[in-house]
Image 1 (tube, rainbow, N blue to C red):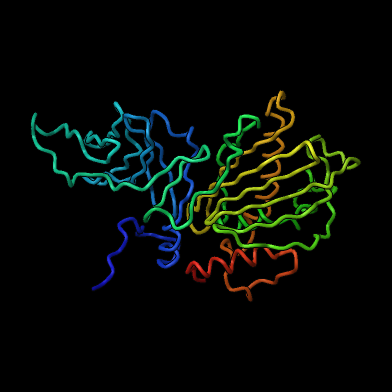
Image 2: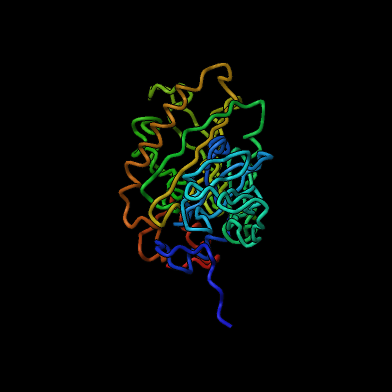
Length: 341
């Protein structure tokens, strides 16, 4: 018996069918929870157009952004009394996905149960909306308790659209050898170029590594290279594309940085960055957000021009040095999941 194709596999897909199938079995972030309110939201994941909306009870629903009646974009419609309303013929769909109203039908006409949205498994976690296109996710969602810790100040940047792959972005996030060069204008100007020897270990759901970096005291945010700090960096990555960095500047001050990356296509991604810190709690976050926006811009200026956009899984295609331990482990892990070159 031939294998039935996944009903969400896009007709024009930038991934190979094998790689799309592998990636479709993971949880992926698609939006901040706060972005989904009174109107439908259009998002794209693995070349698949999705629509997000909240049903009558406020629960987030995710579905293929195609009306099963005549193929219109449901995200162009409205949410009326908790029901997603098609912009073409006014069909209404409850949070369960079932069509509950066909305006052109006479009163009392039965609506077929088959008139139903193609729903996607969805969860809200860590101020984010996550979806899995195929199943319940082969890796659990990341454990990020700091995002709900009331003793910390939490804030986030708006979603960042990047012209690079999710794999390249994650490799950059977990790389420290570029600090002194890419981030010379923010915190990297005082960084020691030599990267200390460190180990990368596999965890139940990802990778971990930690090291000490001599850098500008980022808390000052003023680029004063006279004031440096031996900062302790600890990284915890969860597959497929969830990144966490914990920076301890000293015994009292620390910051957590989270980057959940959406693989929009094989060469485009959207980055959802959140922050939590235990210092300057009485200070406005505007200055810190501007600083983090500048850091992200420095990264994108380089990685959006990296070629190819996707990280080569064949380790012989690019040269590797000792500081590349994380990216080598990352690429090898993807091959164990079944991702192919």
